[in-house]
Image (cartoon, rainbow, N blue to C red; front, side, top):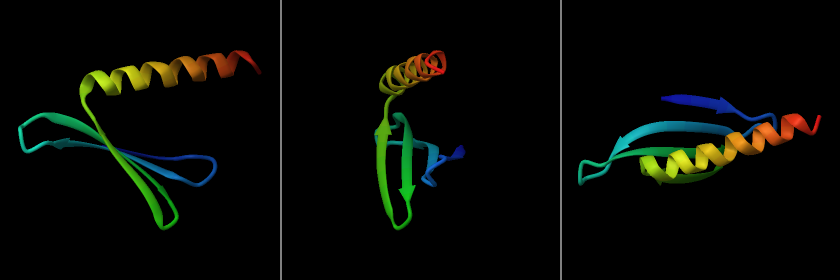
Length: 64
C-alpha cells in the first residue's frame, strides 16, 4: 500500500493483508536496518491507533 521514511531513518510499510479467515487486516512493518517489527491490526484497532496518532500530531504542532 504505502511506505513512509521517518526522519530517523526507519521505514514504515503499510500493507493490506487477508487473514486465513478472510478478515481484512492492516499490516504495519517498521524496519530499522536489519531489525524489524510487524503488527497486524483490524479496522477498529487501526482507527483507534490512527486517531491517537493524529491527536498527538495536532498537539505537537500546537507546541511549536
